[in-house]
Every structure is written in C-alpha cells, then in structure tokens.
Image (cartoon, rainbow, N blue to C red; front, side, top):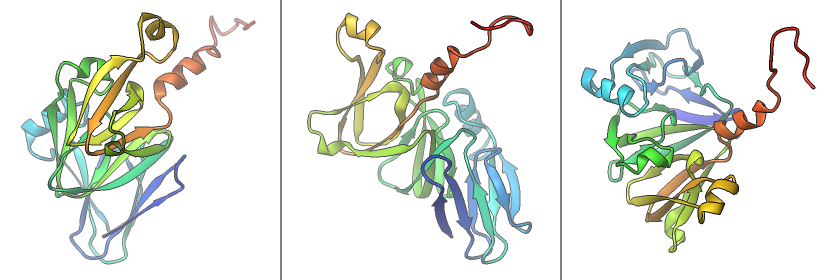
Length: 233
C-alpha cells in the first residue's frame, strides 16, 4: 500500500494506492473524498463497543470508523479532513505511543490501535483535554489540523519547548509537559497569549501554524449584528 500527500500545506489531501487485495485503511467518518468503485467500505465500532465509547465520550473521537478495503492492485482512495489545513504522516513503531489532541486523527493502518488515555488534571487547561486519544501499534498514522503542521524534535531543546495550547496537534511518548502562563498576571491577561504548554524530554511534537479560535476571534469583528434590515456602521 502506498501513500501520497498532495496540495500541502493549505489544502492537503491523502491519496492511498492499494497494491494488493485485502489491504485496508481506517478513516474518520466523512473523510472520504473519492474512491474506485470496487474499493469496499464498511463502518464499524473499531476496537469494540467499550473502546469506541471511550474514544467518543472521553477523548472527543468518534465511535465509528470507516474501513476501506482494496479488492485489486492499482485501486485508489482519496481522504481529506473537514477543515482547511494540513495532513502529516508518521509511522507508529510499536515502542512509543502517540498522543493526539481532539480532532487530530484522520486515518491509519488497521494495525494502529486507538484508545482514550487519562491526561491528568492539567489537561483541563492545556487545550488537549483531560482525556487524550492514544495511538499505538505498528503502521501509518495520519494527523490533520487547521493550518500547516510543523514538526519539532524537542530533544534538541534542553531547556524545553513552549507551545500555545491551541496549537498542539500531537506528541510522542517520552515527552512530558506542564501548563503555565507566559509570564505574570499582566502578561496572562494583556499579552493575548494566555496559557502555554512547556514540553521536555526526548520525542517529537507536532504543532499547527493556525488555530480555529484565533480565526473565530478575527471574524467576530465582521459579524453582521441585528436583523435583516439592519445596516452596519
């Protein structure tokens, strides 16, 4: 099975090329853009009912995942996330898990297991949630985010690496983080930066170049107020 990421980083789309019958890809509902007619689709409670409920209720994932199965060599499948943005591919090696923020999962090989993982009380303030989506096993894993996705090797920064909580996409096991403000009370309330996560350890971190919250705040100033006949100033 071959993977290709096209139109990066603004409108990235994933092209899957099946090399043999029986090869499979798991994907979020509504992620399919197009496929060969003979590619089979099955919707399942992946991992069983309890695991699916944990993903939905605790980690912000979906209970059901779509399984696409190739039936002949050369068939293709196209997958893309809902929001405008980027897709990043990584290979789960079976050693370190990958922790994903809510909404960051797009697709994976069926050998990658997804589960809800307790992130601690600090998750209430981190922007990632108290429960995280944990991916482990072997095979391809595809992350998505609004904006572009930038990769950081945190081990290159002995003093740690600071990221705005709204820009965290995913990180590997081996990294730890704490939530703090960018400075004192004045900076917290007046700088516009709010809370940040400080990562330390050896591992990889994926961050987004944009976040939906900032877009919503920008568009708020242009929102039409009043009834249909009202005119803006």
